[in-house]
Length: 312
Image (cartoon, rainbow, N blue to C red; front, side, top):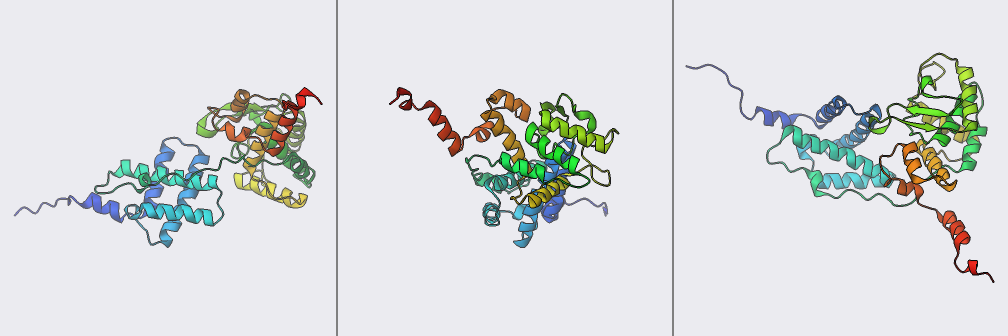
């Protein structure tokens, strides 16, 4: 009698069905990490997929192949109901779509249709992106005090005057900036692309004051009281603390980038240069930065009215 054991043909399928959703998400993150995605992008995937897996768990959905198109629609609706803006909802959709598309290719599951292919992506608002009013920037600057006043002033002005992304500023090292010329070298921006941007005279003075207080040793440009690199979460706490002192609503960190873009264009800058300073590969996304608000339209109309130009 042949006692040789063989592996059942259905073992792979059985493993796929029984493996928890969260484990497949962890495998997806490792796969993306192996592809060389940036730390910021990986963090975005982790957070948005964590939100999705927790929602699935509340619906008793524990395996990938239990997810339906209707589950995805309900999840997107839930995000809207809990206060996520259109951009945040769309970001969650992109993360879930990337995961499910990867799972389909990775596992090649039989008799399974990818549910994300049956729903349309949520629309993103075409309204002008919110920026931090320059008056509020000044209030935040004036609210700095204490041991880290020099650091916090440098943070506020560098964010506003350089167009850095929220995750790029904490990643800067001392050797990435020239506090006399204002040159800032972003070595690993979005998509792992490097670029150069700048900051003006006032921001440069603040950077020099902070470097004097910090010391000349190499390493992270902005540090905590334990002399470790200021994290994205730490940066958000700085902004929140200053906003509370200034008596204004806390702006998002990314809103400072929008302030830079809008101010740059209002001061006569051109879109091509702006796209290079911001690190955009094209001009399409800049349309939302450049979209004029009512005050911009009124001012432009007043300057170029065809009838007023005729005189009385």
